Amino acid sequence: MTVPPPSEDDAPTVRFARIAGFAPTAMPDVPHPAEETAARRRWPVAMAGVLVVAVLAGGAGVAWAGRGDVPRGTRVLGVELGGLTSAEAGERLRADLGGARRLTEPFTVSLAGTEIVKVDPAAIGLAVDVPATIASATRNGRLLGVADVPPVVTVDEARLHDVLHAAAVRARLATPGTPGAITYDGTTPTAVYPEPGRGIDPHAAAVAVTEAWARRDVARVALTETTPATTRADVDRLLDGLAVPATAAPVHAGAFDIAPEVIARSLVFDGDPLTPRIDERRLRDGLAPVLAGLETPVRDASVDVDGGWPRVTESVTGRTVDVAALARDLLAVLPKTGERTVTATFTETRPAMTTEEVKRLGITQPIATYTSYGPEPVPDRPVTALVKPGDTVSLRALAGDGASPQLAATVFQAAYLAGLEIVEHHPHATYREYLPAVLEATAGPGQDLRVRNDTGHGVLADVRVSSRTITVTLWGTRVFDRIDTEYGPRTAVTEPAVEYRDPGPDCEFEPGSRGFSQEAWRIFRKDGEEAGREKFSWTYESRPRIVCGQGRGASR
Image 1 (cartoon, one colour):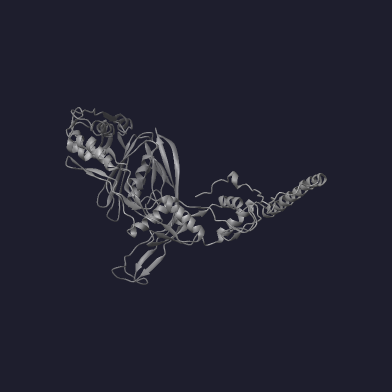
Image 2: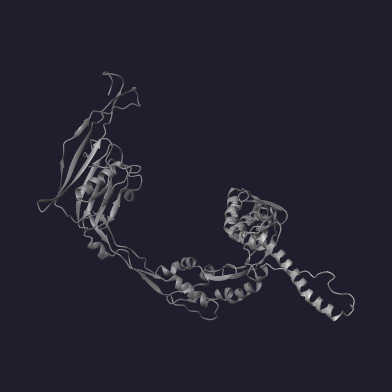
């Protein structure tokens, strides 16, 4: 709610009272001419004096009241604002509201005089409009004396309605109305006529709440009858003019017919006012048997390993009925009697990847393969993935969050031998004898292996899994003749600590491993020459030696 702008009538005015006894009650004697002349000279002077005194007195009062923008004695919510400028008054009121609990304390609303609801001001966006309040105080407090000016309070009508409506529903005070509907039993339409409900008028509730809150009073909100926008006449018109003729006969759509049963399932009357529409999903589902022989689903070209070699599955251009256009045209002819016809149009959908595009990727030969043997059964599943030129493949995307460290190490080795760019990898913290030192990777929380296809051709990653082995083969076009590796010496070697544990079934001997730092170079060779090299380095921590028992006689 806001305060209206000041009108011209709000401007200060000076009113003069009629002087009592001024008008003569009897005809006076005719004065002597000389006396009459003197009296005429004295009368204007006396009258002017009276007017001057009155005006000066009124001006002094106005000046006393109007020192500053806000008249003296003016209060808002108990805050003294008199004699302040508008800016000063606004600052003082904001400061007081900021420290007051009134804007945060729940206040009471009475619903229909029976249900008491505590409402949080913040939940309904209740606030004091300070600029409008100061303007109201300045405009309405111009007369002399003390003036308690009510604040200008704002509220979010929608949020207030939601809060009060929920409370009214819980108290079974609000009842939903029936907006009206038309339903089908088979192909026979049935009318459901609208019924009024009982609810809360959002604007009236906002007025009641803001005014009561400003007075520190209980807000009394009445419930009113809510009338649907749809009338009985509207339902009858839609029933006779559309619902009945809609299912009277099939609609011809060229290569197929739309049966009355399909129309009944697809024609929906909803909303308020009640509005007819064709549900496109229901229409397609109803036509599925006849469209199966007319439509062709789109299929992307793909490549897979079949019989030990890449095989391309060709793409197919999709051909489907434009159901959106069909629904629009169908709704337009349903009110008609006699033969009804619509045109079913077909749209073509180009595959995201065509056969020619897959063939141009150059997936023609194995460019690297690597098999790892793990100490434990492999939890991973077989997977095949196509990596386009320039794309980066993630182990998480390839195999999910549960990828094993063995799979990470195997994919790393295959990508390393294929000459692909290693974007991200994380070696084990301690050395594993069954993996190449430095040139390995693991997987775990916060760890990923990412490889970029920088060959200029497509790469097909084929992962095969058995009980304890994983084989990763990368297919594509070979860029390098060979990948060699050169190792530097192991430095900063640390011996493993020895941990003695109580013997028993839970104790298993572990030989441990040394810690060390080492460098390795990947050497790219092409046409018999070195085409480049890349350095990898890592520092392993030592892994303790576990001994079951104490001292030298401990068992292994």
